[in-house]
Length: 176
Ligand code: SF4
Ligand code: SF4
Image (tube, rainbow, N blue to C red):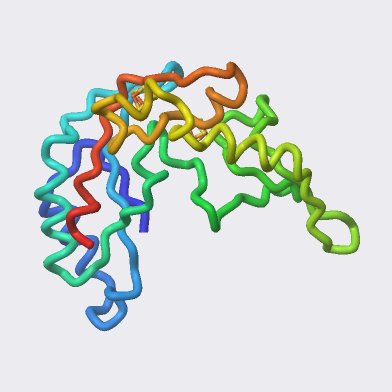
């Protein structure tokens, strides 16, 4: 259950989470992120990363699991972890769908027979770009546990890490 904080209070979050039956909550993984501004989205958001603990505590106390997927806590968190990919309406198979004009994240497609056709070269390139542990600057960087090498697409397209100034947190790992 993905929750975007955009001028939301803890009470609002609680009211929403209480709508789901108690016995089902242990099966639901909650991912909470603060909405940030981009080139095309500009809004004054009073929620900040500093208050995430309050939101996490609320979700955990109501019986939900919290997402500690390491990729969800990256820059814009849509880049998939090992077991995840996206299927687009044209039956493309993608690892990142945030910038469709840059096809480095497209690792294959589904053909007319319903078979998955994987571009192994593209897939290996993606996972290679995802692996920040082969880079000395990342391994020595104090932000590594939060950043995890940053945007995979950026690395894949430009050959270097973005080191973005986005808010990031590995706080959710402590709720496991
Ligand atoms: S901030 Fe830059 S150097 Fe540090 S872990 Fe992230 S990508 Fe690597
Ligand atoms: S690869 Fe980069 S652009 Fe794509 S979802 Fe991840 S952080 Fe965002």
